[in-house]
Image (cartoon, rainbow, N blue to C red; front, side, top):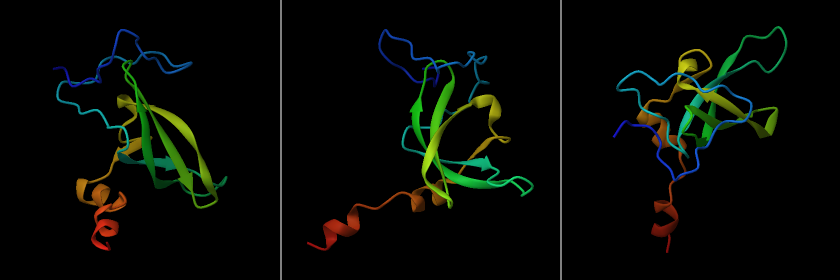
Length: 112
């Protein structure tokens, strides 16, 4: 296995995006539903901040999409990222922080 997302015969390609070169060996793709942080500048002249985003799609052409929400835009927007932008436009969340960011279903089951 190459570690790339697999799919059927239809190759999914990010709209309006050029296919990036393949990632380096050992690079791990983000997973759908996973949490990443993206660099966002909410207001002109203000420093950018790292905000949580949820990965909504991982495509075979090397791009993935995430839903980004800010305190001033709860509805958020979708943005596209590639492996080449890791560390500049997006970064991984440490696993223990990612697990804490995901809602727990065990607490509702324990209440019954």
